[in-house]
Image 1 (spheres, helix red, strand yellow):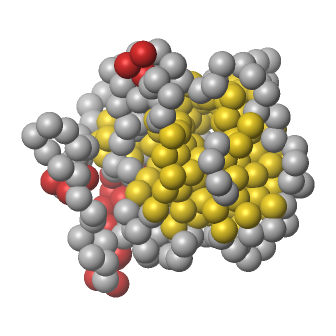
Image 2: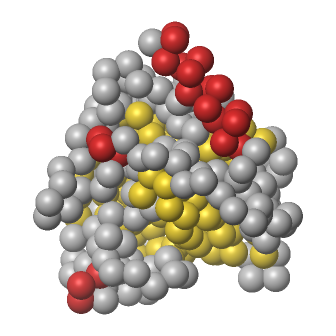
Length: 266
C-alpha cells in the first residue's frame, strides 16, 4: 500500500501542473490544452451498462489541502486527490459558496470530493440552501454537509447529501477504511422536479441527525438519527462530488448556518 500511495502522490504532483488553481473560481487561467486523465474502470459511474464497484483493496490517494479561508470556512481540501482539481469561492454579496469539483464518489471505503471546512469540537449545527447551477439530467452528483474526523480519504464521517435525483441520505463511515452505510429518503426527486431547498446536519453529543425543508416549510428531522462518536477537534463543512472522476461540475450553498451548539439548524 505504501508503494501505491507514493505512486499516486507522484502522479498528483505532475498532474497539478496541468490543472486549474486550487482556490477561487475564476482566478488564474487554464493551460491552452490539458490532458484528460485516464479513469479506472472501477471509478466510472454506474449506468445501465456499467456497475460501479469499490476501489481495489488498499487503494488511496493523498488529500490536497489549502488553509486559505473561504467565507466562514478556514480551509479547503481536495479529499482523496480527485483526478481533476477543482475550485471554490464565496460571493459575499449573495452569501453563496460555489464549489466546482471532480470526484468519483463519497462512498465505499474512500471518498473523492472538494470540501470547505472548519475545525470544531463539541456540538454542531450546520445548514444550507443547496443547488446545482449547471443543468443536467438527474444524476448521483451530490451537495453534501460533512463532519469528518480527518481529511484522509477513508476518514470516519457523517454525511448529509442531496443528490441530483432529489434523494437525500444520512450516511456514516463508522471507522476509517470501512464501507459507508446510510438511510435514504425520496419524495418525488429530480424526475418530478422536487428537490429539497435546504438541508442540515446536527451533532448533539454522539447523536447525528439529518434535517430538511422540502418546499419552504420549517426545517425538520428526516427519520431516526445515527450514533457516531467524534474526538475533538474534527472537521465540519460543505462539499460537492459530481460522481464523475475526471469531469468538473458545480454545487452551491447559500444562507449557511454554522454554530458550535445543537438546536441551531434553521
